[in-house]
Length: 477
Image 1 (cartoon, helix red, strand yellow):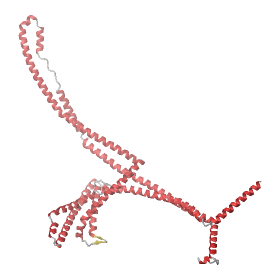
Image 2 (cartoon, one colour):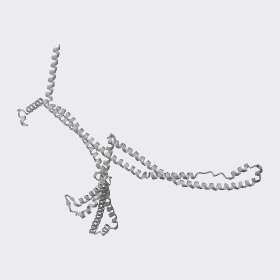
Image 3 (tube, rainbow, N blue to C red):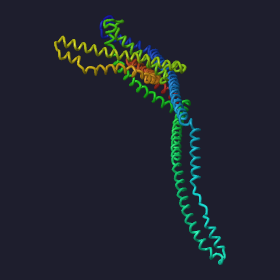
Image 4 (cartoon, rainbow, N blue to C red):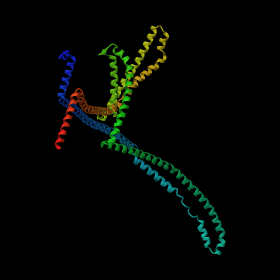
């Protein structure tokens, strides 16, 4: 610095000289500097633009892949639901309508009996009594011949009339009783027919309602196959809901696994040694964790064998006989591990009681020691044993939210990646535009120290322009 100010005897003059030299140098290279700044700004702009376009293409590819994955998952889920509905209809038809021939025969027999009883219950008019013909015969007699026999004939007619009346009344009562008896016999058949038809109506209504459900599911399935935007949006929102719900249930399952771990970690230390280490971790903790993970694995295999979940297609493709054997094997192993955990929970409670009693005796508190080994402590022991036995079976159902979480995670990760790529693409476009404006700003900043020569250049150019206009006007004049 002193060297620069020492080129003249006066430092101020030296500084002014350096300023003049620097300004002159900057003015001389002004065009080249502006081109350099403009080239750098345009180069950055093009680079950011190319990167933004590449990210946009990646976003489109990822969005198409995510759409395909979402449609495939939705199609698979709809196929499972439709398959279940068809199985239900098949079961309904097999259970309720398989005996349709027997039902038809029963209805035909009941209707035949009703028709027979109805025909037998028809009121048949009685035959005309015999005294009618006798009266006709009397009416046809001559007056002279009939006088002698009229009295006896009328007497016989009267007797016949009384006897016929009694017989007619008896026959009428007997026929009425028979008809009523037949009508009473018809009543159970009518009720049976009514119950049968009611049950058939219920079965048909159930089939109709299930057919409506299947129609709706098939319409949704066709929308998914045709890749409609509405189906994609519905599947996307459903996937997000399934992701958060399954994540919440998995958090609950992790809490249950933690409680399970605390139940068996302490007695496991008594079995494998509390001071034994594998790396930086206690052997007892690793053993307890392995037992819990084996239980969860057996639960997954059990759910796969029952075809409740489909995380392992190999298990679902096994023959039915092998799959049933696998069900019993995994259930037996799970039952044995649950029994082991119940025993470990009992051992934990015994160890805890022993420690409490020992501490109380060391303090000289006999009452506390008696309380520690009291008769009501079996309640907590039974509760811990029950928890140790039930929690492994409860963890079995982790397979259901785990499958939902895994399937929905692909969609959620894809949507998150699309959002990140979209944000990066927007940021790169903004940086590209910013680089152009930054180049203009740097050129303006570069011209700030050169305001004096630029002003002089502008004035000289204005004067030269004015002189050229005067010359052109003079020649025109």
